[in-house]
Image (cartoon, rainbow, N blue to C red; front, side):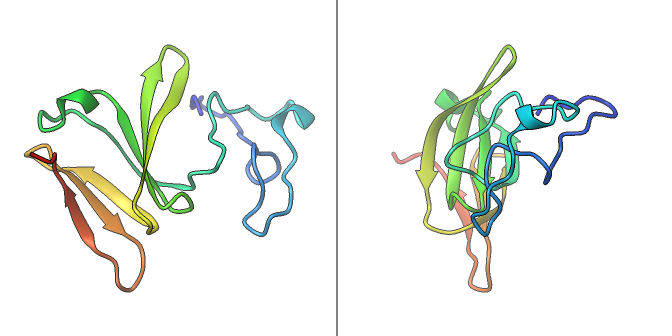
Length: 126
């Protein structure tokens, strides 16, 4: 969403998706008093962590956003435009992603979710 002070975005009364149990949530156009999202993803990401990449280790990612996905079980790279963002690519990791951060050397650190979670350091393949 483009966050506005005092804005009400309607969750869980309205959404562009379904509840976790599969039941439908009415779309935003059914309740115009709620702010509709500028961008949404189908299939759902269920976002956890988020970074805007500013490192030099992956120069082709510079300025792109990365979203950790609980439901999507990987990373989603997004590119920003004037009034929103668009998905560029999904990087499946096969595990729920709890958090991600950019390290001081430009690596992307990814923390999996769960009792046997791993901390992954992503660097370019040479």
